[in-house]
Structure formats: structure tokens, C-alpha cells
Image 1 (cartoon, rainbow, N blue to C red):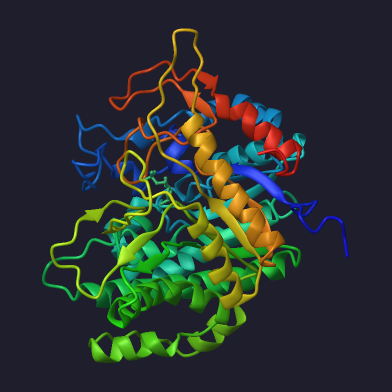
Image 2: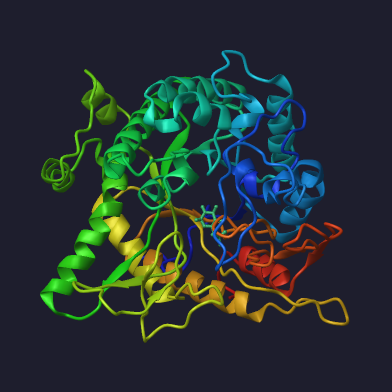
Length: 475
Ligand code: BG6
């Protein structure tokens, strides 16, 4: 038996994750078009973000400057390299390449930017991990086509994939097609640009748009493999593990049903067909998914190489939610779990739930997992001596990494890597705040947009550096 039995694999990809729309800024620079993220105003837990019809003068749109990663990426990547990152997950802003989404020719300046960004990573031996569309798409596609409700989006997306796959085929191996694709059922605008009127059958619109994204994703996987057979192309889902409130079978069934609504998305990507439980659901709820000739084959031929997923928290589900206190979570709410602590934003912290999730996903699909988001959103304080002692973040990550290690070494889960979210502070997707920070690197910027944008290492910076250096041994 190998004496490495209790260790992370040698080639494990430790790193960090961001998304273009939450860090780059430079929203209208060098030919970039307006994206769906660019029309999202700043909000807070109590004031939901607005998704305005175009840009409205006088509103605060945090993506417009974000943390100005667009101009500062060299210094930021240098800091990632100092932490020893093996990989760096970011996304390409679709609107830098196709400003309106339906052009046939790409914007060279946008392409050049990502050439430089990936080269900068590779200079330090950092493997870029790229999300093709992370909560961002050309706003032009929303205005002109109603976004993913129109099947034409499949072709626009594929044209975009074709351009970036060919351009970066020597630089990028790991790709993911759509960030948290299952969030479409919870917030149709954020991942899919859908605006749904009250008169419409909401689920019909959502699931038809999701079908278009499934087809786009499957075609992209096939295309990518043709362009470079070494590409590893994954889906990306949010994994909100739901516990039944009690062992009452009604609660257990409610939790199963809740999970199926999420598994639907990974099932299609990994198994290459619609599962029966959803076919029945559609039938019973009068939802007609329009399949074109050949769609079944497309799904079958475009199954993914790995599952990218985010894990932050768990929630509790009951057969009877009436009168129960709900708590916040990643894009979703659930009943409070009395056994768990929660973050200041109400997300329930559950390291053991992470191990359970890894087991659930791996045992269901038996393909490699890549945890591309995990972390604690918290407000940080700068002490008089300039230090930021984010022990709460270290504790969160330490406990999750320890559980991930058990999942790999004890339960036999196969994992590619781990990229904590927001390795440098960035704009929160749900609230648009800056105050909700995830980073190892602090960015001097406030909710109202003020701040010098200066970078500063937090205590967790050196801690994570040691984690990577010791390949997860020294937590
Ligand atoms: C995921 C998204 O939902 O969680 C990220 O993929 C997001 O874009 C992250 O930022 C954390 O959520 P939030 O709302 O705290 O930014």
C-alpha cells in the first residue's frame, strides 16, 4: 500500500478563483460591450440589486470599476504566484471578445488582453482555468433576442467558443461552459439574461432557456475536443446540499426533490440525457421543452470531462415550510440548521457537508470533481499596525480543506483541484457589495466605490501559502 494514502495527490491544483465581471472593471475599455453584469446596481442583503434596462446615469454599478484587475493583473498574479498558486480560475468577459454578442468577427483588443493575462499566469507556472461565461453575457443579446430564450444564442455562444478555443488552445487546458448553470431557476437574469413577465409561464421560459444552454454546452464540449483533444471541459454547478429537517419521510422526500431540481443540470451534462424525474415534472406541469432534431444526439456526444462546482453552505428542507425561519444562502434560502454556525451574511458554515457533497457528486457520476469555489464572505478590519487578522477565514478554509482531504483519502473521491473563491477581494455577486470579502488579498475599496484600490496581504495569505507549499499537510 502506498505511503501517500493520507495525502493529497501530487498534482493537485491549488489555486484561487475570480470572475471577470466581479474583478476586471474597465467595463467600456478597448472595445468591450455592455454586459448583463454591467447593468447590475450595488445592493446589500436588505436592498436587492437592480438589473436596469441599460445603463442609467447616476446609478452605482460596481462592475464598472470593480477592483480594476484589468489594469492591475500583473501585480495581482505576482501575489498569487507568491502564494504558490498552481492554477488560477478566471472567466473571459464575453463582451470583450464580442461586444454585442452577435458579431461574426471578434474584437482583437479583447483577445489580446486574455493572451497577456494567460501568458502572465504561465510565466509563473500557473495553469489558467477558464469559465467561458460567468454571470455575464452581452447585454445586446438580451435586448435583441431576449437572451437564452432564443435558440440563436447557441450559435453566438459557439462562435465565441470557437474563437477562444482556437486562440488559447496552447495556453488553456481547463474550461467550464457556464458558471452555476443551475442558478437559472433561482435568478433567471444573472446566469441567463432572462427577463420574464408576469403573464408568462416562468418555468417554461427558464427550462427552455436551460435547454438552449445544455445544447450550447454540449456542442462546445465536442468542438473543444476537436480543436484540442487535451482540453478538459467541465460543467459548473452550485451544489447546495439540502438536509431533511427530520427523519420524517416527508421531509426526506422534500430534500430529495429539492436536490433533484439541482441534479437535473449535472445529470444532463454528465449523463448526456434528460433524467426521467424531470421529464415527468415537465409533463405534469405543462412545460414543453422544444427539442430540435438531433438534440438528443448532441447531448449524448457532448458530455463533460469533469464537474466544476461551488460549495459554500448547506441548508435544511422540510415537507412543510410554513412558519419556519429561513436563512440566507448562495443564491437560495433554506431553513436554519440548529447545529451550524452561519456567516455574517447568514450562510450556514458546514465543513462536514462539504465531505458529504463530494461523496454525493462523485458516487453519482464517477468523474473527477473540481471545487472551483468555496470560502467565507466576511467584513475585514485593518488594525492600527496595518495588519488584517482574518482568523475566521483561516478557520473556515482549514476545516473545509480537512474534510476535502478525508473525502479524497478515506472515501476515494477523485479531485482535480481546489480554488477558493475571491482569492483577491472582489464585488459580491448576490449583493454587489465590496464589504463582503473572501480574499487572501485585501483591496482598499468601499461599498460606495471610494478607496485607493491598494492591495494588502491578509493573515490568510501566508497561511494559504503554507497550505499549498505543504500540499495540504500543514493546515
Ligand atoms: C457564486 C458565484 O454564486 O458565489 C460567484 O459563482 C459569487 O460569482 C460567489 O461571487 C459568492 O457569492 P457572493 O454573493 O457572496 O458574491
